[in-house]
Amino acid sequence: MAIVRPFRGLRYDKAVVGSIGSVVAPPYDVIGSEEQARLYEVSPYNVVRLDLSRDRDRYGAASRTFAEWREQGVLARDLEPAFYLYAQRHRLRNGEERERFGFFARLHLEEFASGRVLPHEKTLASPKADRLALQRACRANLSSIFGLYSSPGFSLATVAAQTLRASPWADFEDGAAVRHRLWRLVEADVQESLRRRLESRTVYIADGHHRYETALRYRDERRAETGRRAGAEPFEYVLAFLVNMDEPGLVVLPTHRLLR
Image (cartoon, rainbow, N blue to C red; front, top):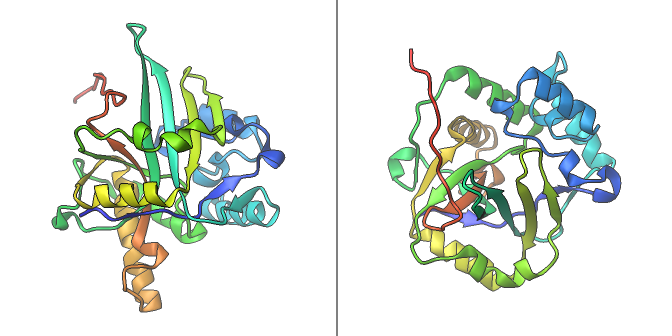
């Protein structure tokens, strides 16, 4: 079974940073040097300064910046655990609009042999060394893995309808004309419903294999350092965005690959 739990997330204080759209960034591994420079200019609080610092001492700079932002109130921890509902609305080339619903949770780390969390890619040593150095420096999950689970007939938007009727905490459109919305889901009964549903599912890693394997390595290091391995410690979990692969909002499009 896949074990998911709510968590007390660190969120930007909008009174300090302004528009949430100015502080978000794509995944670190698709950001080139020009995009990195642009994100630095967009906001002094853009998350790229943590996830992909351009400082000579990348990891030390990320650690210092992360600590400063928490001390200065740029980032504030939620008072109660939540799942975080995330919707992305986009338009296909044929003009059809789709909206993908998923939720952020802390996912219990499992060895692949357990069958509870499964990969589909091989990984490389260099990216894992990079992500491990960053996690050691900041002791936080700065970006999530993207996981899929299968649950035919289940609609997250229906189950979480009460949450979705409220104004989202974040609502903005990015440069690719994708609308992003985020809500905190704190209703205990809905949290319990999601927890039970995932218990009988397998999570397939769609993206974030290097981050997941890095989290396994970091967990093992922390177990050795602390002597704790009861399974409830924060390092036993990884931040995950989970989407039901049977919902119509999930679209997989063809891409071009160069083989050589």
